[in-house]
Length: 509
Image (cartoon, rainbow, N blue to C red; front, side, top):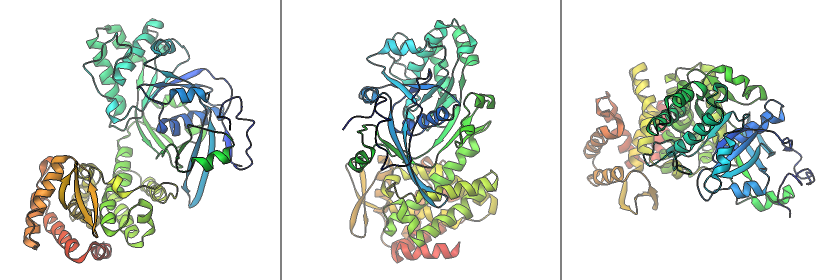
């Protein structure tokens, strides 16, 4: 069976996939340089540029840079940049299953073996956009980077070298700067990237004129990306290949839902008319409310639910939606305790919550609760605790679901031993691994070892855990009634079983 490529994509039989779309096959000028060739960027950003091209709104291609060794560039080039993207999920209550051949990528460049071609790309006058996804740790300053490295080790170092080559090639022309849109999942990603680039420019003594060009000719935009991209479907690939009629070593899969929030000058939307192409892209002068919405509703719903649901006996997010008790628990938490604390129009919040619950229902994604449970202490601090504190501030009472979720966290972290970096818990006679910072795990192990079965000792345990200011950035014992409520819930979980307590909490709310 032939491998997918530009010379054969139109010839392949589509009889088994009536909804397979093929992106434009014209040869467009390279207008985008993309640092990273992984599943997410191909299932999100490149899909969006493919959509722009299909609508005749961009007419540009993406040159993909492999920033580290061992990537996919050779495979990308062997398929002429083409790959099949399958987006599946629930949308407005209906199952959606879209198949599309993405044609937006022109080529891939291995930065380590072809550094000169990378620099040559900077001389392209039509290049305008920079996107990246180099992991959360990718936007970080490295003192080891040097301007004559080929290439520097860090992503900001590579970008600085690229920008300087661009600056010299066009003699500082202010019209030859870039729209830079990092997709790394860190707060204020554009601001942080710009700060490091300017620091390197100064340390490398590249000149005040270059620093001014960075500042005035380039837009470093803060962005927030939201789509689950599940990547290469190895368990389904044989059936998918038979349906496609060609072999594709880059098949990518993801959910239907997508959102890109971009904070920056809205005049740039004329150059990148994503919304005109029907994409869920929001340009704003303040992305913070949208980041807060995602963290509190999507991530917060996960964190407030998964630990209790796992102890209850469930294993995946979809099982949480299917179970009437956990489903009611989750909805009450979202609609009655989280949404009232957020400062956005109510209709936007309700629509986002509806989308989140549909995403949780996606039958094509198996999202395991234990995977989501990783590092739950720090996740609780950033995802759930702010909603709890804001609710207390607004209502002068404790939110029952969110308070219970803290007790469920303490119960989930009850383990018998730390082994190979994990605390070993027990659910109905079966061991499970609790993954977190080792100091957190040892603290829970030591504190739970002090429990003698009494409620009084459990109250002492809650006193210690709530007082861990290094975890919560405050002493949670100072919140009126919290210690008493958490210890009561925790004692009931340990003595009555979590199913009975969940039912009581739902009826209380």
